[in-house]
Length: 183
Image (cartoon, rainbow, N blue to C red):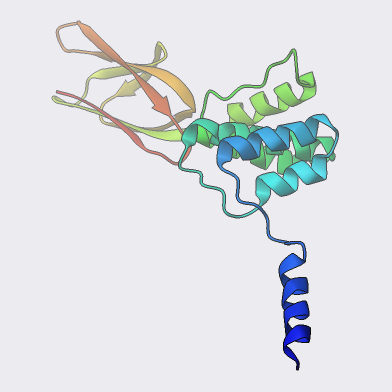
């Protein structure tokens, strides 16, 4: 091979368009996918949201990513995958919401349906044991107690032997045990 042919082949290879997916950080990826979604490009938005190399360490946008994935799946009439994506959004943030003024009300109802089915583990102990506990004002028995409670922000109350009470707020997430201990 003469040097001029080798040079020509090298230039053609280097000039060929790249087929690699550009790695975008999570905020840029969600923003770009939202634009695609708004243009009706649901498959392209899903491809961007489900492509590898996403750094999910920034938990502030993980729920947004999954909420948008759910909306894309729903737009494609794949409600099973939409529910799965909503569950992941709620796992990241049990208080994740869709704006009913901007989103189809059916999707808001679907998100709330998924939320109502998700529970997380809560373990409540006290010293001494046998003290009354309540979750969101509802009596739940005495300590020690291991419960599965609805996800989200919950008020855990304790009534001491002398009749005084204490309470605390906890955030319940699916598959993440929360322990409350009163001494």
